[in-house]
Image (cartoon, rainbow over all chains, first blue to last red; front, side, top):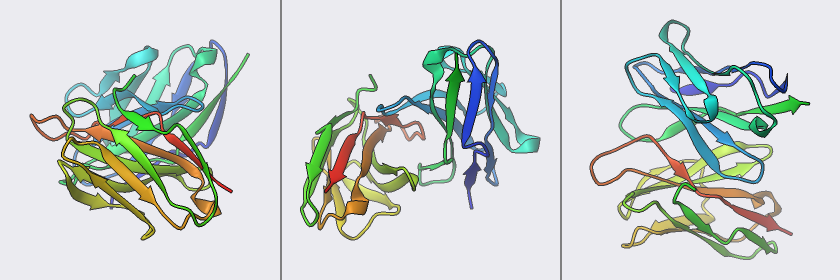
Length: 113
Length: 115
């Protein structure tokens, strides 16, 4: 069965420091992979997606993610975080014929001034 | 702005009551998904509709039901409400008429508080 694991419930990073949020998935074929961000009191916004091709994908707000098939990972990165990046980040995987997404539990990003 | 709208933004009601949450998908999107987000359960998929027909069910209670209308807006009905139903309810849409997609666009959510 498909599953998504975000091993870190919370991550605290200093403003200006680099960020990496981890996502591991379980899926038999090539998955469709997504990262979403949810700011406090807001809905989820699509940050970036991977379907095929170049394994390093660029998203909005300066984020990027790298698909590593051998590690079943799709980690999200940003070279320098801003206080406005404080939010919850969700990784999701899609595959199969039902066109649904399987969601990770989310990682809450806390920014230290 | 994702183009998905949800009303109302906030809803406070008492146990045992029934409420209806409304969602309008992005223009042209045929598929609507409903999710429940609570502190202890995370983001839970409830149900999906595509062009008026139920397509998939997730962890939806029997007290909950949904439908999608000919104009593609959707309603989620929650009845016999319990304290544990207090949560954020999100609607997402996807799929233009040109084909299927996993990409979902979320509305701002309805915060339901049951007292």
